[in-house]
Image (cartoon, rainbow over all chains, first blue to last red; front, side):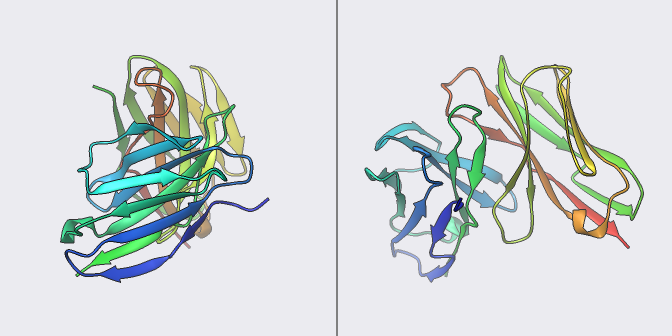
Length: 112
Length: 112
């Protein structure tokens, strides 16, 4: 059974640019959530999607957005990048009955 | 306010030297507590789920336990390959079923 797939794994952008990250959940999982991980803050919740609907959102500015498609694949977008957006962005799909999250390898974003 | 605190922040053990990692939590109601292992540059890997006080789960050299206020991850006779960051997360019953609060982790280093 394939795990959670995130692309791209690494990317470098400059301030002011925008970026789109992609996540394919485990087959059969309909819930996808996104987290930002930085050394100082740990894992911070960005948002969660279920059946193409955003069900919960963390305390991030409106520059961070996401969506989910009918096949449960999800994308997140960060516009007008800032230096502080440099982080590992993790996607997780959820096992519905147990609540267990299964993470992808992450997308490492560096903003210069 | 819902909160998760892990201690110690970092731990160095000799191979074979058993120890415990702590995860203290403050939530109005607990839906589940989760342990993850994270290797550098990778996404967290699911280890255990605990749902109620008194519950224990075991896997190889790891054993997780849960009380009403904290969880312990016991590592028995660790090996160098157990070196990683161990994350604890709680899912509170409030704020819907989609919110997970992560601790900042314990960085474990096992020396040969």
